[in-house]
Each structure stands twice: as C-alpha cells, then as structure tokens.
Image (cartoon, rainbow, N blue to C red; front, side):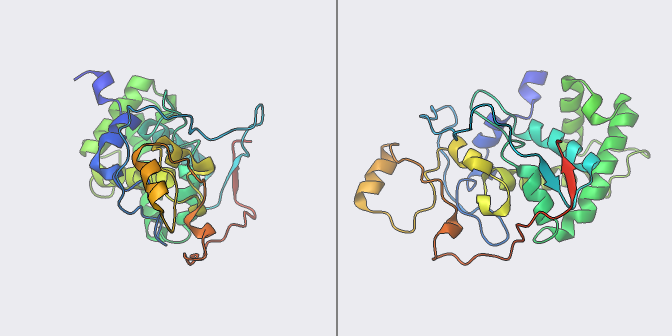
Length: 249
C-alpha cells in the first residue's frame, strides 16, 4: 500500500464515523455529542477564521506536559489533522493545549499513559528507525505512526504499557476533542474546528428561518461557545495560566 494512501489525513478523519459528533457542543468532560458533519469535499464558503495580518499567535503554555512531550505530541497531532488545502489543523486549533489542560482535570487519569506512551513511542522510533520521531523523514514518521496504530510497535526497547494501539487510540480521540470540541476547554482556537466542518455554532432556539438557512447551507456561524449562553452551566476550568512550560517562544 502506498504512503499516499496510508498517510493519516484530516480528510480521512472527517470521513470516519469517529468524527460524527465533532461539531457539536461538548459536555462537561469535553466529549463531543452527536451531529453529522458536512461532506469534507464541499467548499468552506468563506468560513475560515479571520486572523490578524502579520500577527503570530501567542506561544502555547503547558502546565502538565514537559516541553519535549508537548513538541512530540504536537508533531503527532499535526499528522492526525494536518494543515492542508481545507485550512488549519490540530496544532493551530490548540488541540495539544486542550489535552494539557484536561490532564489536570477531566483527563487526569491519562497523565501516566501520556508520560509513558510518549516516551515509549520516542524509544520505538529510535530503535526501529535510528532517530527521534521529529527528526525522521515524513515517510518514516507516517510508517512509525501506522506501527503504533496497528499495535505493531513492539519490542524490548519500546516499553509500551499494553498495546501501542491503545495509546494511539487515546491520543487520536483527545486530538479530535481538542480540535472540534467547545473552545471553552482550551482547544478549537478561533473556532478552527467548527469552521472546518462548517458547523454554524450552538443555538438554544432555532426558528423556521434559521432551519431553512441551515438546510440551504447559508447559515452563518455565530462563533460562540455553548457556555456563552446562560442555559449551560460552566464546568470548573481554571483559565489562569500562571507558570507552566512556555512552548514556542
């Protein structure tokens, strides 16, 4: 099978059933609820988030992940949902920031799985391909990720706790949450994920006119978090970024 067909692409993710709920508002744990995304090949109709010209986004600040862990996780996320002709990807959407924040809260039980899994993945790349993941060629990076996804990243020098496929599935699920979930939780920056899916945003009431516009593909996105509405009770999320690991300076 060719590298082109096996490359982990955002287009393939959007086609998969696992993203069926990605455009909906998330629960207090940050897990998307059900909603059907549009066909990924359809034009985006100018829904890309506006970015100030010449102004770079603020560097990410990580509190649970070390700088090395964050860089490796960003590299993996960039393969899972890369920037492409459809627009920005998981890294620009802040998926890794979402994971880092959640590791101190709703995903705290996964902290050791990330620490051990990222270290094991890096060891596997060094043992099987002679270099850390971020120093490999694109082809070797893709093939290494396929090994992990299929559970083939084994060997005495890797140290995966259980199947590597479990680690891959965890990371993939959390990257999807961070890209397409409600931005209140730290991901979906500038509504990148929702604009990618052409999701018009959370609405607590839908009039017949809005329904007609939605069905016609003409409903403009409102770019609002579910928690901008008083109908949704905010979960306890500490948005203060005091200290932590600065990444991207």
